[in-house]
Length: 423
Image 1 (cartoon, rainbow, N blue to C red):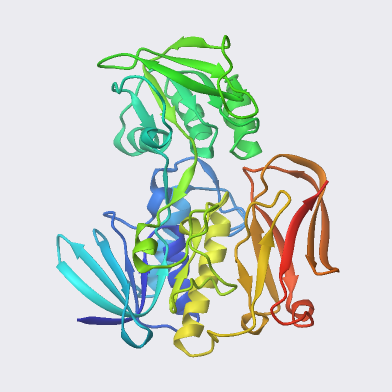
Image 2: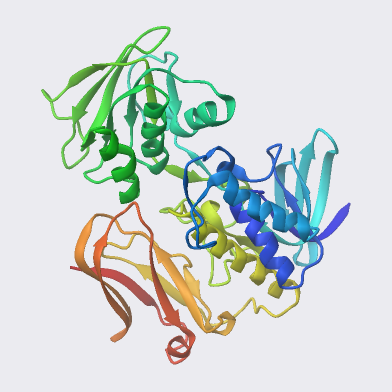
């Protein structure tokens, strides 16, 4: 059986940054396992710009951003395997983890790892998960599949397009399809707010006069061999279609952009606790799951809005994994549980042990609706730890609060810390 110090599952932006974080923290034995035929993950098909403003202080395309981290990994001599599908993950003896991986070049192999970082990314919700009635004709794609067709394979999914869901990939594909000569009739969104970044609404819809219909959804699909039309209806506050509001739109393509789901089949196989809101594992301040030696970062943990934040978080996961391997990370301590309520949907991390912190801890979260002029309030009992007024908050954009170690160490041991929105 192959023995490795650190195994990283996923060679996208999170896995690459985690590998560099661990290497810079002193781990020499690192193996990245990537199921695709090349490193870079989803960034390889994201040929639009807007990446890297925080990390590199300049605007890059997705492939450019990925290539910078790939070059760093290669220069550092970090070993990686492409075409490597991880099929099994289970706790081993003496705090190790057994990783089962298979590939065309090396067959089936079990690897014993001293620590594992989960960086598998996320996937799109399919039509089957959306319960859309009607036939199952050709011409229905997730927005990410359409993006791969156009940007990597050079194929157009169709010419007359309706997009369901206003996630960022859907918004970007509305622009991309338009630039390639297709007619994008509209973007329908079930919720009364968009799920994408405001800048993407402006640059991808408003600049091309593509309507965004909030509180609308697809209620019927027509067409036998190829989609011929979709029927869209307005929905009420309970997301139920309003009778009489239906309107039929001829089209040959329906793109689904209805949210992303962390790729966590392996996490469940491992037995780690899953947050029902994010769909990702529950982690502590060190980004370690409740399975010793298993860390998580990037979109497998919770869906991020910017890849720069993925890289930042993943680098910290790599650094923490190194501390764990060196025995500098205490597994048992007096942790503060973070409670999300009143508009805060979740927090990452879910708990904090001040003994494992550096001088500060970033807590990231998303809100459940649009807010204007509301305050993010963080309390422990009657003590206010942070109170920051935000001009605008939206579900499509991550928020964060920074907590200082000097403040947390003065709190009662094990006391809960509450995050909420005060309007």
